[in-house]
Length: 201
Image 1 (spheres, rainbow, N blue to C red):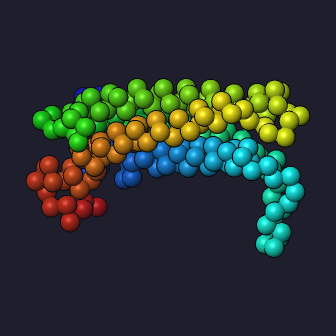
Image 2: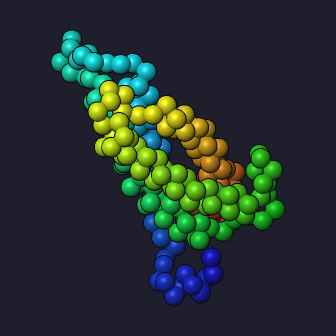
Image 3: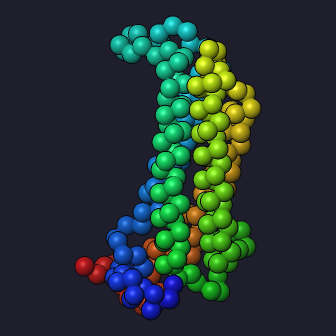
């Protein structure tokens, strides 16, 4: 990012190239992933195993099929909300990135291409997660509200496909940090010739 723009915004960048100590995007990414994966898995469990009476009674828990669908719905809804913040922080941190020029990832991409694909992919995934949430809500409250199986098989197949897409997309993000050292404090200190064991306070 342009140093004059950074100065005009009044940002004081730390050793990791960010105005805060811990990058926010990776933290929010894992929250998005956790909520989405739990949502899909609970919907699959409820659809495949028709639990019409309480289970786990020995533990004092009364789990029924509709409860599993509730977990699926609210986790997906949470993922849709969190993903807006995940993408916003991702773009902010990409704008502040200073990627290496003559380096390639294990996939043969340089840092700029990896950043571009990861950024565009993040926007696309946000759209898909929001669309799936709307689709899931229509099934829950309109199309299948009187059915014991609250979700369509097509929805579950799309959810499974999304897990694969999230894996590929997440690998691109991991390469930015692990292979290119973007916003990694120790990597930045090594690039500057400083001792990474002596972190600045």
